[in-house]
Image (tube, rainbow, N blue to C red):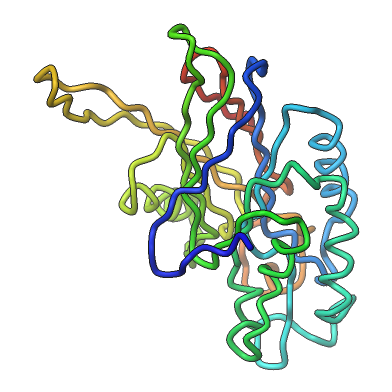
Length: 261
């Protein structure tokens, strides 16, 4: 029901409560359920935290499932569950987040199965939780709280699983900042790079009505992975990174975003 038209940019709008003074967004990506190094306890801690707070929301930003195939980099013989078992387990593990998921995107790991079979396991997750889905990226418009003018505060967000083969912190940051070449938004987020990174910048946008320029602040954050060190990452000499993700706080009284990592 929620699937967006692929190949086009659309806005997915969510109306959040007016009495929220703020809300938290804690995106989840790169859990790689089915991989032997999947850190289930770490993910469960985040699920508990989000589920236990009325004003905490999440977004499933790809590679929720590992989906190792015979010709993929991952090893099917090391996998702890097959794709069918993985999708069932993901539904069970994420069930406490029902009603808190703003959307779902597809990761490169799920894409392996889609390309071979046309079975889109990310879309299956979105359908199960009855939330918007896009295999490419999602532009969100969230309205919340009550600003000084009596109207809700409006935030725009663009989230994509992302692409990168970077090994260095600078290269991974570039993969995150690349999103600002797609569209203008208050907040951008990617997964895929398996490293929690945060940045902000300011650009000036024209106010044609008053003939001046207005500063526009953009906030960037990448979610990390839920994989303990080892396996493919260690064989390829990727550096270890902390597991988990970030928490972004969106103010409901004035436009203001803070990221905790």
